Each structure stands twice: as C-alpha cells, then as structure tokens.
Length: 278
Image (cartoon, rainbow, N blue to C red; front, side, top):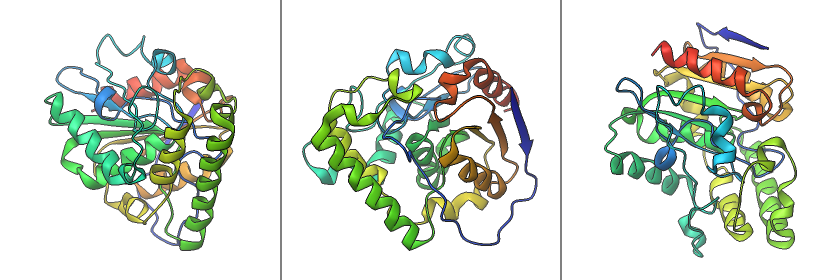
C-alpha cells in the first residue's frame, strides 16, 4: 500500500540540514533513469535511470521494475564511475559531481536522446537532481526514490562528508563486506571496493548547496518515492515534495531504503501512473 500527495504550493521558509544520498550504506540501485543505462522509450518518450552508491545496474537490481514497464518503455540503467561494471579510475580527481552529470549527458548524446525522464535511487536520486541543475533542457521529468537534496547548512554538510570519508576508509579496509545487507545491496553486484571508496570521497561527498537551492525552480513533473521505513530519507523526501512545485510524493508502506525491491508492484504502479500523465 502507498499513500501519495500532491503539494501545490512549495514552502520557502527555513534551511535544511536533512540527509541526502545514502546514509546507511553505499548502496544505489537503478530505479529508472540516468544516462548510459538510463533511458526509457515510450511513444517517443525516454527514461534514463540512475543507481545508488554501492549498487549497480545489474539485471537483479532493476528486474523488479522492468516487467510492467518495458512493454511501453525502454529502460537504460547505467553504473557510475567506481560502481558495478563501470571503470574505476585510479585518479581521485575523476570522481566528482561534474564528471558524473557530464557522463550522464554523454550517454544521452551517444543514444541520440534530446530528452529523457531521469530517475534515480539514493545517490542516484541526488545526481538526477544535479543533472537537472546542469542540463535542465535534457530532462523531461524526474523520478526520485529514497534520496535527499543535499545541504545548505555548512556544519551539516561537514558532518555528512565525515561520514562519507569514514565509509571510504571502511571500504578500503574491509572490502565489499562493508556494504551491509539491505535489500537493495543484496541484489546488486560490485567488483571494486577501491572504486566505491573513491566514489564515496568524490561523488557521495557534498560540496555546495546548488541542488537544494534549485528545488523551487524545478518546472518538470517530479515523482518522489520513499519507503515508510527509510528513516534517513523520509524527512528529506517530505522536504523535497514541499519545495518542488506540484511534486507528487508516494510513501510506500512496509518498505525501507530498497522500496522498489521490497514492494515492486507498488513502485511499478506509481511510476506507470506518473508516466501516463506526462
């Protein structure tokens, strides 16, 4: 069961120190969108899909979402640098937000897609928002699951970055066993703990308030999905729904961070309904 609500008038008061990305584990799984393996095609529409920090676009990670959607849409999931089957360069400077959104744009260019519905889970959701900041003309709509908008508060950002650095060090010392056992992690496949560590330092880390500041200016249809048990991101999802004009928020009962794994039928229906309105 899921509850949904449409926020007609975004609030603009206050600042936000809510979490963004993946708080408990470097785990991103593809939901529906973001460059290279991120694009869905339906009656001329395309959807690109992004994943979360320790997940990859492996068939197991996306399969719960595909059956009910692939009849009408082409799903193109992809792996960020350091994740899944993508390369893990040695140079730390090659891992950052700008490289990631540029990679997404390059994928759309390679596929000759002028626009796509960009979707992502966890860190993938945050990077979907960052992609909209950098390339708004390439975004037809946004689908965001289990993520937050980053930080405006410098102290909160520093605390987050300290956790990201600790995650990187844990991956370097413990290897892939440091990822934990959430539902979204168990169905993913990773090959390089060192690549994930570099991604944690360069992509998971927060550097500015551009994304959170952009929320009131988003003019594309936006679907926000969060598991009722995804404690680190429930408030962040509510915050985004209150700031993005006309955003639709769906709270999925009996689901945690991997809501699309925990309740795939509910997620499929929410996405299908959203896409039919575009």
